[in-house]
Length: 132
Image (cartoon, rainbow, N blue to C red; front, side, top):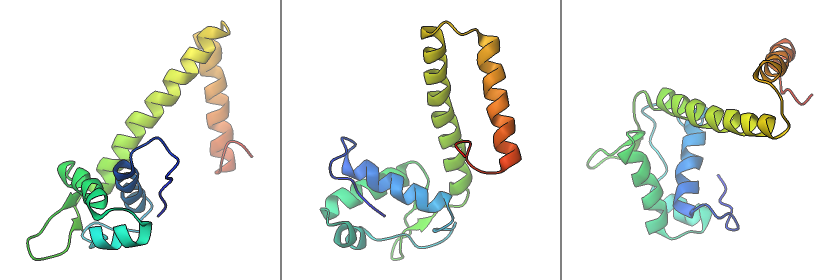
């Protein structure tokens, strides 16, 4: 887990997103104990209150759950909720950017859809990054 202190994104959001990433990639599984705010603050060299703010953001989203007297754990269904959320937000942002770029260079919707379909099928065939 890394924090980019030069990033304009607040540190507590970077903490929350890093924990989300660990859940998505399977480093943290549903029901697993999550890093404590003290562990995060020492490892990342940040204020414990900042680490707590990132953790609490995930609690309020239902990704993490607090259990009195026990450690914080990954909530059931957290990975699926995170994947749905990321798909919705990231794909929308990419699509919006693509449409804006296409409009600027006067590409038709049909051409854009054709190009995306070609790239999608190329990516499926390679089973890897489209950049290869």
